[in-house]
Length: 474
Figure (spheres, rainbow, N blue to C red):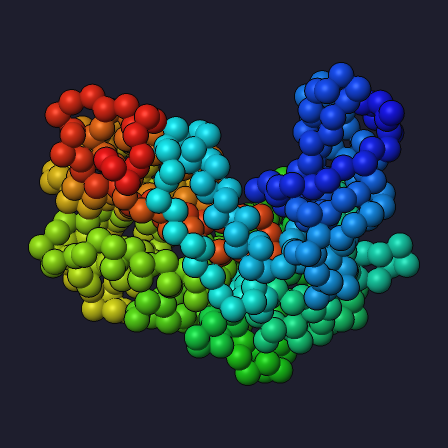
């Protein structure tokens, strides 16, 4: 029988998928002990020979050596480099099964981490087929062994660039720009950045499109400002591509994996594109955070608005509000809306977007949520949370438990931290979880966005052990 050690070949059946995209199987040793094995590029239902590449006492990571029996959910990837490129993890997984797997991830996290019993998780909001959806792509730029300019996503588990001239998950209107701009940069002879030596100039090529307007914004991320003839090529691109409305230059001179530096300059055209979202018009800049799947993000906002049953008399607080993509659509249905955001540039854009849409019942404030939440002069009826992946600071949870808004909507891009924070909000019976709506903002990957709806419980006057009660019965 095979041994539990690095380099060993084991037979394995894949039974689950992780949120990072790997398949999961359990291997039984000669003593009857089960060890968990994580294998990329596999699908539940696959039976494989796998080579152990990293071994710990209770789990291991492995690579597929031979596919013995194919899962009924396994399909041929649409992209010819899907097995190499790190941009997608699940192109070999049937899309409907991807959605089922993501819903299951949410349920498992809420049960295992949050302690909820039979959490009320809806089917995943999704588009048609999971392709041609990304409104923004950011490609590292480099050179091949022969000196040819390449751009694409990094190979899985490395910083080796997989060269692309088109990508099936990005908006297909961006493909000609990717292909031809690479050729222009090659012809100009601009040196590409080498992260090992911290030399060269061109670091990333960033493309962004308004899905509804078709307007495109291009940004070059460079190590230095002084790029030969960059102004001329920017104007040439603007003349050559009618949908292109602006070309930007961003400087990042640091040794870092962060893409954008602190300053961006306009080379040609205008510094933003226009996008229509949830019945409003937004100005979106190069560095602006804006969900990459416009249509599904809009559908989630509509679900939030409908679930809240707004009557027009409420005060709504949108924490971590960004440029107001949730604040402004919801402001149309409440008496007053307040946005909190730590980035001053985002708040300036949110204020501008409010003015452009003639929305006057909203105010935006710069600062951390944990500080400003305790300084509010009014107590909101509804709080919308959309924190970064690390979730809410404990001070935010404590402030909410003190304020006790009637409803909380917690939007999260990491279900583990969502489950942790929901447990804190619900554990004493102050809030009850009424609905969980997953949304597929990143098809062909293991990532899932989630909106969880909490209401102030009639049990808030006493203790309640929610882990022993069905959520639907609270």
